[in-house]
Image (cartoon, rainbow over all chains, first blue to last red; front, side, top):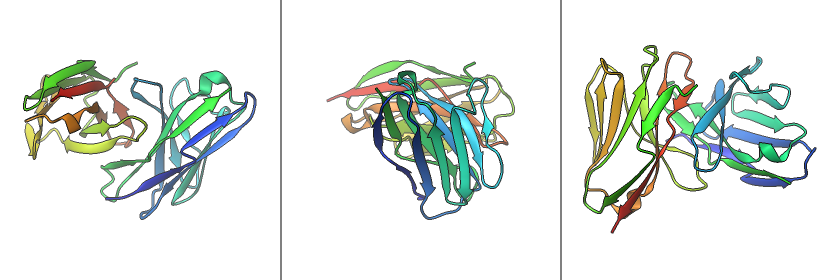
Length: 115
Length: 111
């Protein structure tokens, strides 16, 4: 099946710094990618839809100025958590639809810890 | 607002038993209903999925039952094994491809 990678797999940063997370589709192109966050023992919450060549679409309640999304190419989307605070500590997961535009392939996730 | 409701929150099943997880949705625009399995520290992996035009789909030990009129669907894991112990999420999506996940069920299969 299709493979989606994320980098880094985990990151620890100080409060106030910015962190960039990359999501790559390794063997297919994705004009759309999705970003989720997941708190321990909780569900995945859709944060935003990343669109190649255009602005991302954010879900209600998600601060677009805090969670900057850039979809620079057909295989790469980045999520930047700006001025991170401890409450931003979470598991961030991206996904991309496969060729059938139905099956979603998820990345392995990035665990962010803000001290 | 939780678009997809899932139950139970946790489930303990004996090896060889049947695990049943239920989900319900409200948005009739949803037309794709997958189930995902997630191990700790990993991203979700697709198990099985169904569209509303069929009432049941079976793949190996995994079966989805779908009730369109009730807007409910369920996952049945037959002959449950300890290796099935994981968190299971149902999801729903529509035309925009955005997935909305249920709250998850932590399954433990006891040897």
